[in-house]
Amino acid sequence: MSVRSQVLDQFQQVALEQDVRLGPLSDAAPLLDLGLDSLGFAIVVTRLETVLGVDPFSANEDGGFPLDLGGFIRFYERAVQ
Image (cartoon, rainbow, N blue to C red; front, side, top):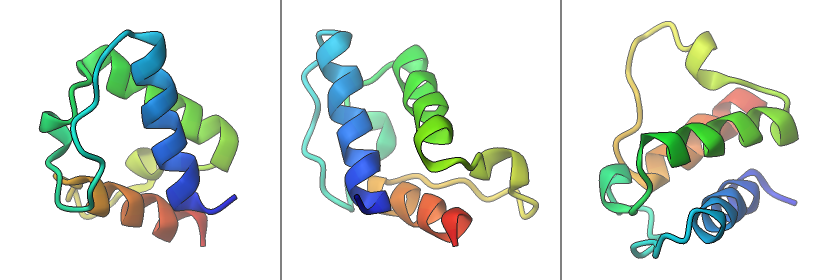
């Protein structure tokens, strides 16, 4: 399964478990507009660390964090390489 698929799957799974309706999962969608609260987002990040074996947030030295879904996916894709 691709990194993109894993990320999207985790957002959908957490939204289902939290009974949250997600906004459109397009690359341009701002992360804050997806519908998850901070706990939901933390669950996504924790699960991605488990399934992908990386935590790009702790390894991020430049301090830049993704603001939209496409950037979030690329953030993980770069970390996995």
